[in-house]
Amino acid sequence: MAEHGVIPWLADVWPDHDWARAMLRKGCFHHVAVTGTAVARVSCHGTQPERLAREHAVLSALEGLALPVECPRPLSTVVDRGGYSGMLVSVVPGAERSDWGWEALGGGLGELMRQLHEVEIVVGEGVLPAPRSWCGGRGWPDIVEDQVIAGLVPEVARVARVVVEDLLAAEADAQFGFVHGDFGPHNVLWSDEGVSGVIDFDHCCIGDPAMDLASLISFFRGRRCRHPHQRSLPARPRSPASSELPAAAGCRRRACWRQPVAAARARKLQVSVWCWNTP
Image (cartoon, rainbow, N blue to C red; front, side, top):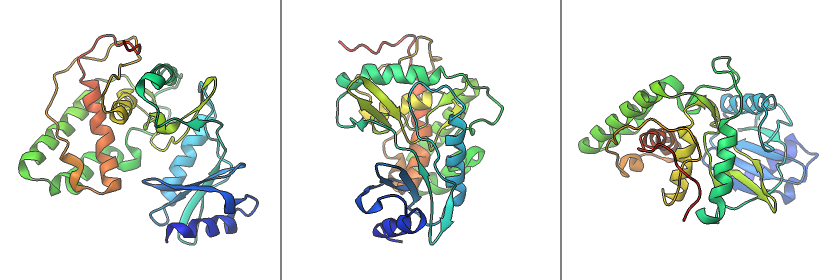
């Protein structure tokens, strides 16, 4: 269905909100409609009740964790009808600062990442999903092979397979904990006092915290990004990687490839202690 059909659908499903005045955005996986009373997250690739149900379960689980800032809360169950799947979540106060530079945001982002990674969570109890549950979970390597690597030229395909192997090897040694899964200024909201909230927990999991560092490095293209943790990341030699790797894939396929691979590369950065203060 076309994007313009989202508003009538929302008005039919949840008529108590002012969707005619909603701010509507389209991401890789969702239409997002923001009003003063609720935020609607609606699938933009037809009906996807399983995806929305997983995201709903994650947000429900977050309510039981001591997160350092406000995050969305489910306001409805998942509705699947009329060609869409959607749910309502609470409005998180604050504004994005995606166009601000590292010098302005680095300190706040570093402190927030540190706080998120210190959230107490019991690994293995099923509170949050495993890494890459949104794109195949344990079957992720096969998906990448079939849908991404298969379309690459042989030389680049060989590099891609090495990167996948490196990622799996790096995670085997990683100490798992809370991971946002798409950390960066695009999902952090600010007030005059500082960070006011975090949104978009679609890829949240119990996994390697290097995933969040990877998202941040990717957003700022690695420029002047420094790791917030006082503990060190294991030093490993770099493996080759190519910017051509995701070029043959569409939006969803690129997302399935880029974030995990970037995490592997982040973990292999040879550092002991990084400081967020930039000269």
